[in-house]
Length: 102
Image (cartoon, rainbow, N blue to C red; front, side, top):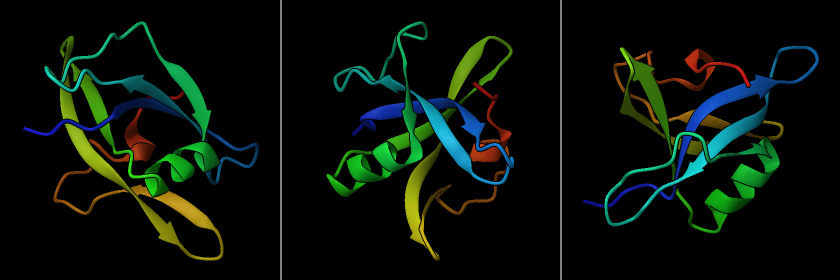
């Protein structure tokens, strides 16, 4: 199984609370799919977009009852600027706006 390069566990928004400004990312062990919950980096939306363009992959993770579960893959969408969104699926629980704030 191929694991994403990074998991996203939380986000923060701009001052107007209209766009994601930062994402909390955790590097993923490519052999096991595991990560260190306490080891993370808060990166900007443009940094994540740049990494995705360089073929790095990101997926959300959601903590429920003390256990992490894999959410949705992040994608870039372009409107007037580039935005991040999760891949379309039937779940709303793993969407970026439902992650905890940083």
